[in-house]
Every structure is written in structure tokens, then in C-alpha cells.
Image 1 (cartoon, rainbow, N blue to C red):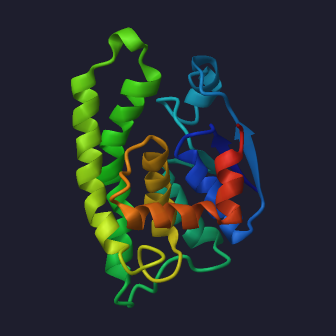
Image 2 (cartoon, rainbow, N blue to C red):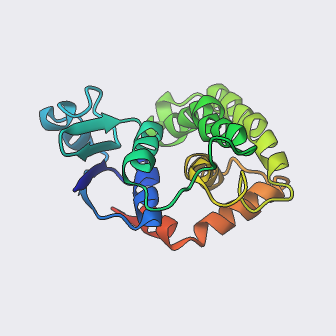
Amino acid sequence: MLKVHFTAGTRAGRVIWLLEELGLEYEVNIMPFTKEGLKSAEHRSRHALGRVPVLEDDEVSIFESGAIIQYILERHKTGGLKPDTNSVEFPYYLQWFHYCEGMVMPPMNQVVVQTILLPPDRRDENVLRQAQNLITKSLAPVNENLKDKDYLVGDFSAADLMLGHSCFMANRLGCVSDEMEHIKRYVSKIEDRPAFQKAITMGE
């Protein structure tokens, strides 16, 4: 049985979303976003930095949401959610799959720090503004790519699990302007998926 160590409002939602899309059975350990929950000795034995998600699969225990998604698709998939390696779409699937962590999430992490995690007296408006500008720049190619598409590459795929989740989070943080109408439409389409709805509300 697959087991996911999970905290609401984190990248762990991507893993639950995937498992729901595939209809796979799993257990979930919901932990609070607190020092006691994530930094306990028990959880640090799973992830030395006390982060989520962590996936356990019998003797396998791995972290990093992208790695977990790729692992599940290769070991447990009941449906593709990725193009064939010989497909013309495959290189672009890989591109957008990894784009979120390379370009979108680093500045978004800073926005979360500056608006949620730090107390008001320690926040830096200049750092926040720079991070917001970087998110806008990094999302511009995504918006352009979605101009005439429902999803990033062909049908719904694991690239949408990764980058789509980031677009949803960016939108929720107020970092997707109304001018990015294609991302707005894309996020709305993602929000309509029952598997996403279950993942994003779990633990709230």
C-alpha cells in the first residue's frame, strides 16, 4: 500500500492529485504545518529537513514531489498521463514538467515567506516585489503556450500536475494578473477536476 506523508497547502497535494487521477489506493498521514509536526524525530527519519511530501511503498521511501510522481507513473500507473517517449510531444512534456520547480516555484517560495511565514515586522517589501515580478516573468511563457490549448501538452498529463499546481498556487497568492487570461482559464479547468478538488481540500 502506498503511503503519503502530507501537509495541506504544500506540494504534497500534487501526489494526492495524481493518486486520485489514477484511481490508486493509498494511505495518507496528514501532519500539521508546525514544528512539532514536520520537525519531529520521526518525520526527520523520513526526510532529514522535515519536509513533505514523502512517499512510502514497501521498502521504498522517497521525497521530492516530481520524483514521486515519476516513480508512481513508472511503477503503479493505470493510465498514461505522459506522452510516449517517441512522440513529438514528449520533449515538451519534459520541459513543462520541470519548468515549475526551475522557474516558477523559487520566487513563489519567497512570496510565501514574505506574506505568510515571516511575522510582519520581519517582512521585506523589496524582496516581495522582486519575487512577484519574477513570477510574472516566469508565467508569461506558460500563458503564451496555453493560448490555444486546454492543457500544457496535448491531453491532461503529469506536466499539468506539476506546473498546473504551481499556476493554481500562484493564482491563489494573487500573482496571476487578469491579463494572463489563458492561465486563468487553465486554472479554472484544473479546479473543475474532481481529483484536484479532493487533493486541494485534504487536511483543511
